[in-house]
Length: 507
Image (cartoon, rainbow, N blue to C red; front, side, top):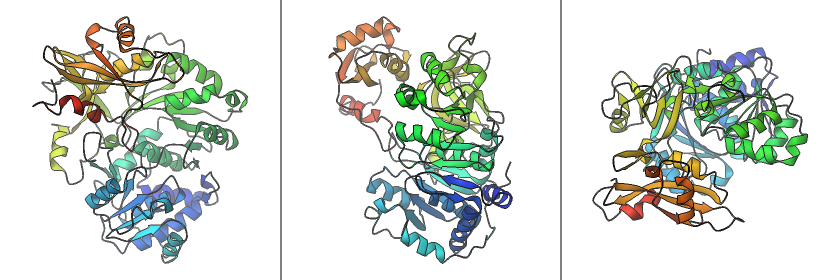
C-alpha cells in the first residue's frame, strides 16, 4: 500500500523511470517523465495555499495525471469535471468549488473564457506554463481526512454535489480494490472510462501502483477498443456489459488474439448467462463485477471469478453484485427502523469503511442526511442480501414506486422489458393514481426496424413474466429518453408532466 498518492508515483519512478506509464492514441509518457512534469506542476501550485482547489476539464489525456500527482504533491485538491457538461454547468461547479486555477482542453477554451481565475489551455499554453515550474518536489502533500479530489455527482435530482475524496480514502481504495486482482508481472490496462469518473481514475491508480502501463483512449468505440486490446497486448480492462456484448458481435473480434487478456471488470449492471458464455468463449479471461459509488471511491462489493462459472450451482448468482470487498462493511437496513434487514428482505444498502467519503463539499444538510449513526453511508440503493452475504441490487430508492402499498422497483421491470425484441430502451416511472396513490408507467423507445409494438402488447407481454402489480398500466412511446451529461436517464423530466400540477411529487 502506498503511504500517499504521490508516493505511488515516486516509488515506481525511482524503480523503473523508463517504463511507460501511459500510452495510446499517439501520446506516451514514462514514469520518470511523469514524475518530473508533475514536480513542475507541484512547484507552480505550491504558490497556492494548502487546501486550494484546481479544476480540470478535458478528455482523457496525460495532463490529467500530471495535474493529479502535481496537485497531490503540492497539498492542493483536484476538481475533475465532466467534459460533456454545458458551459453553465461547468461554471456553476467551478464557482461552487472555489477553484484557484483551471486547466482545460482546447475544445473548452471558448466555453470557459471570462473566468475569474486563470485558465490554462492544454497544448502550447500549458507547456509555457509548465516550463515556469522547477522540477522540484515540494513534498507538502496533505494526509488523513484532508481533501485530495473533489468529484461532483451527476445531479439527476438537481444541482450536483461535491463528493469529498480524502488523501487517506483514495490511498485505501487503491489498496483494497487492487488487492482483488492479479496484477503480477507487468499489467497493461485499457481504461476506456473517463478520468472524471471514479471508476476510471481508480482503475488507473491501481495499475500505476503496480508499475503497469495505461492504454489511454479519449473517445472509445468498440472498434478502437478492439484494436487497442490486441495491439497493446492488454492484460486488464474495464467495460460495461453493453460494450462486452457489442465486442462479442464484431466479426473481427472472432479472429483477434486476446491471449494476453487476463481479467475483465465490469459494472453498472449484471451480466446475463448467455452473454457471459459468449464473452468467456471470446476472451477466455476472468470476469469480476464491481459495485461502488463516487461516495465510496468505487469500492463496495465484488463478484469474483469463481461466481462467474457457467456451471455455478447457485442459480441466479450472476444477478448478485457480490460480497463486500475485504476492509469494507456492507449492510441492508429496514427502510423505517434502520435496523439490519433479514436475509432476502429488501431495504437500503449502507456502507462503512476507510473508502467512504467524509461528506459533501460545504453541504452539511446533504452530509447529515446521507449518514446513519456509526458512520454508515446511505447509498440510496435498494437491495437485499442472501444468507451467504451476497448483495442483490433492486433500484435507486428515489425511483422506487409505491403502488397500493407494494414497492415496485423500476430497474427490475426495465430489465424484463429490455428482453422484448421491439424495445430499444425504456424507463419506468410512477404517475399519480387516485386508486393506488401512484402506478407504474412505461416510457419506451422502439427498436428501429422491428414491428411497431403497441402499449397493450407490451403490458400483456410483461404480465406473463412478472407480478401484475409491477406491470405498467400504460405505455408512452418516445424517440429518445432525456439524459444528463453522464448519460443517466433524467426520470424527473419524465415524471414532471404528470406531477407538476399536484400537491405531492409521490403517491
